Structures are given as structure tokens and as C-alpha cells.
Image (cartoon, rainbow, N blue to C red; front, side, top):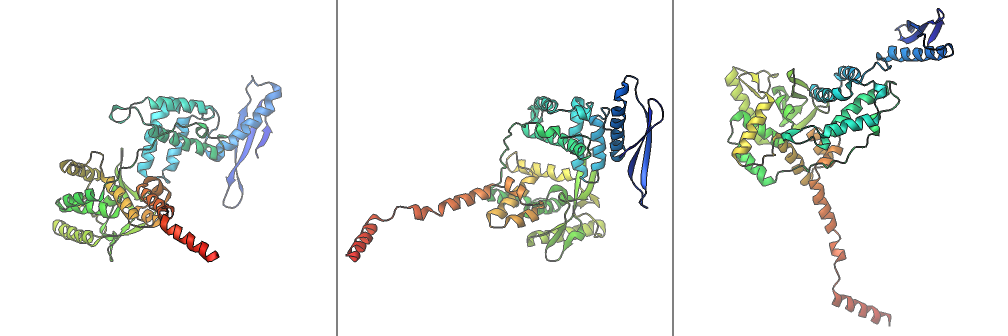
Length: 397
């Protein structure tokens, strides 16, 4: 609670507790406020009490909850605080989306943002051009709103807002585009194409196809991550961040996992190791696996090279590097691998995302379930049924 001391007719000293020292003593902070002349005498007490509450929250959170706290100011501070929680690439995505909405709501005080304001913002976003000259998709609009909601949710957590206005915005229904999963014969064709590629690209794409690793996880692999028993340790990821180049961080779910490689892929990794030893006169355990002349290969290099390989061999335009990951997950599920094991190999935190994304194996299981009752529902042989009935009647007589 704040301690208020009157220093004059309209001057008050407000002292609030700002936490405790290591020895248990209170850390006190004080400020003197002058009540404006336009405030009537009967309202002085209420004004001072409101000012004391505002100062207490400001000292505790570092943010002024008054109308001077603009959304842009708070969002930028939120980004700075989240730098220890989110990966650099994720944080950069949030920053880009927030900067895109600052012209609309950045200058508004937090306490003035209402659901209607956010609904008008969403409508304006739907008119903005997206990829290929088309208007922004509804799924993308939802991502913008979710980012704004994360900032406002933090303000609610810090007692700066009473509620999150983004939670009261009715989102328009957005149909999720079905994920196109390649057929096994397509991956067999792709495998034959990969085996004709230079050794570095051959190993990279074989790893992607046989382990389902993300692009950044592949690029962050080091020779010390390769262990006996064909085991590969996945613990880092490399991604491109605007203004920072390529940065390395932990995996997407912040966990280390182990995948087991097929013998063919393990042998090709050994071949790549010997090639790098000859090229660089030796290899250190901390050296990146996917490097050329001792320097890391940029992640975009593998994506661009694969696009050329797809085009050269007649694969669909919507296939990309992540397509191999989709095939890997679907292939495991269709062949009886449990959802938990598949999610662990893919680096998912749980099976929820797996079940939402890879529905094709589930459709096959539904067809199998529907066929279980076919035998029971088939009409019985009429002649056999009549014989059984006659025998039953004769036995009763």
C-alpha cells in the first residue's frame, strides 16, 4: 500500500514499496505530485489515491499505465523482454507484424484499444496486398491479430489492462488449405534424382528425406552430433534473421532429441567426412557437417538448389524442402509408427499438431474401421437360415 503525506494545499508526497532488499528490508520509492487547479477540492483525495495506485503499478512493472502509454511503446518493450524466451527468427516475425500495424494502432493508448478498433484493423488488413498480388489471406490476418493479442495479454498479466480486447474480436472462419503429401512413388523418383547430385547436396537431402529434420536443424548439425549406432543428436538450429544474418539457437521446442539414421545415409555421411578431411586437411568435432571450404553453407542455398532439381525433373511447383518432412511423417504413420514416437522424431512438443496436420493416415484408419462391420451387416444366406429355423422347430416338437 502507498503512504501519502500532504506537503501543501495541493502538494502530496507518495511513497510506495518497490520490492524487498536481500536483507528483507523494503525498497521504498517516493514522488511528489501537484494536484492540478482544475481538480475541485472535493476531488483532491480521489485524484491523489488514483495517482498513488498508478505510481505503484509503474514502479512495479516499469510501465506507466496512464493514457500516455502507447501500444507501440509497450509492444517494443515486450519484444525486448521476450528476447530470452523466443528464438531470434520467431521474434523477428513478431517484430515485422507489429511494425505493420503500428500506423493503425501504434499511437493509441493501451486503455483506448477496444475490440471494435481491432475489428477495423483486421478489415483493413484484408484489403492489403499479399503474395502474388492477391489480398492477404484470412489465416495471415489471424496471425497478425494473435501477435497483437500476445502483447495485450502481457499487459493484462501486469495489471495494466483489465481484459484483453483481442479476445473479444470475432474471427472470420478461415479454411485451412489441405497439406499435399507426396506419394511413395514420387519420393522414389526423387531419391533417384538425389543420388545423382554432388555429395554435399546428396547427403543433405537424404538426411531430410530419411529423418524429417527441419532446414535449420540440418544446417546446424556438427560432426560431434554423430554417434555410434547410427544415432544423430539434434540440439541446435540455424536460421536467417533480417539485419542479423544467420543465427544459431536451440531447437524449436527447446529440446534435444535423437534420431537413428538408415545405414545408407550413415555411410554417405562417412564419405562426406573423408571428403572434408582431404579438402580442409582435417576436421574438428565442432565443425559444421554442411560446410564448403571450411565455411558454413547458407540455408537458402539448399532450398534454391532443390527448387532447381524439382523443376528439372518435373515435380509440382508447390513442393519444397519441407515437403520431405511431410512425407516422412505421413509414411511413418501409415506404416504403424505410434503418434508419440513420430512426434518425438519430428521434434513436436506433443501429438496435437501432428493430428491436426497429418490427417491422411487417419482417413485410412477410418476406412478400415468402417469395414470391420461389413461381415456382420451382410445379409445371411437365406437357405441356411431356413434350415436352421426348421431344425429349431423340429427340435421343439
